[in-house]
Image 1 (spheres, rainbow, N blue to C red):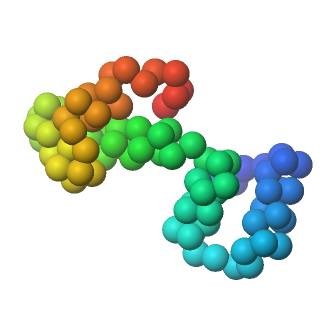
Image 2 (tube, rainbow, N blue to C red):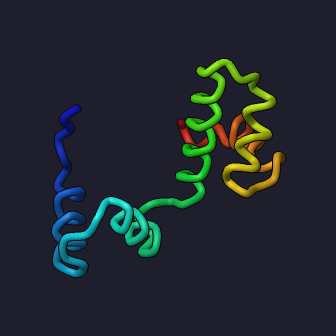
Image 3 (cartoon, helix red, strand yellow):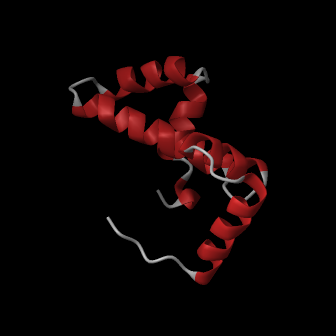
Length: 92
């Protein structure tokens, strides 16, 4: 999937490259979270939702998948439940 970058995205890419050089994708995500460009809370919610959806797609019951997600991400079941049902303002 090819996406056209905005002027702001291009400038951010130049800034990160200038300050940090070539870095791995994993390191890049850490840098962007650290400098506040990427919201870590939104990343957590997205990761949990996608992980649970994948488990359900494999035939695991949704509640079971949510309990497994709590163990996998080392968070409470309540956090997983909120990620699945209450964080609607995240637009995911």
